[in-house]
Image: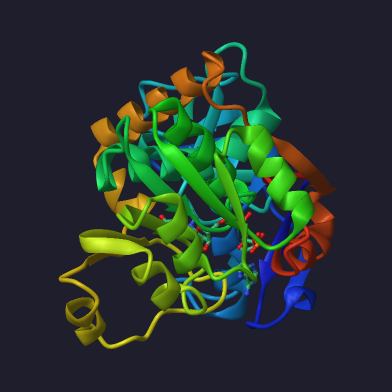
Length: 322
Ligand code: NDP
């Protein structure tokens, strides 16, 4: 017996349907996973609404999960039944059982449980490449992180602090401001603040080398206004809608750079996936980064979890339990 949340037509959370399906059989190169925990991510909303298109419909949404290998397909040599595995970036996660290519999976180290693993693979590996590769954060940098109390945001704040940066976080409420101060943010700004003016004050007019922006449409121009000449705008998400601004604005605001990175590209090669995951596991087991699972929902109630995420009620990571 297997159950999954599927989307037959795009739309609101009510389009998430809990269905009984056959247990899938692994194809060559795949394993079947009995999932113990599934990560909730903003990308799941984009696949539900149709902003991002699945290859076919109906689709079992969800990109991230953790569980034990339950069956092994032909040609898989590195995994066996009973192995504890986790993944990010493989569509089809909102299910009790799923098959996934072995090359997309990593083994979960001892000391990390399934819930923690499902909470951190996608958001944590994203934070890793953002602070280590898209822009290598170093001691002395002052950086700005939007949605700093969110899943990716709260990991970014901690990781950048660990690397020695001064971190300015932006959040929508006083409660979230207190939360990010606890995570180590040096400055907690509110979305209602004049953010470029505050950044000017904090940096003594120097402004920032980099901004991490996952909000998209609503914050794009504000973010550019926080950068110094030649600064780097990292726009990595669309929580408020996609950015459509003309690139001429980069010239007007000081020969700025902009990048739109994805975890998919940064972990496309197996060696990059393994290195990124290992770096994340090390950051978590050393205590440099704490994964806060602040909400859990039964998987069948995924619609409720989507409502909470979209109405900005969640903080840290959220896990769905099959
Ligand atoms: P979050 O937990 O960060 O939730 C989204 C947060 O965005 C909210 O809590 C809210 O924080 C803020 N927000 C601002 N404007 C809006 C709005 N109009 N509607 C809803 N929320 C808004 O989610 P995730 O950690 O899962 O993802 C964060 C972002 O990172 C997403 O945009 C996601 O697409 C992106 N992402 C990109 C990846 C990549 O490879 N490029 C990989 C992983 C995530 P507040 O109330 O404080 O403003």
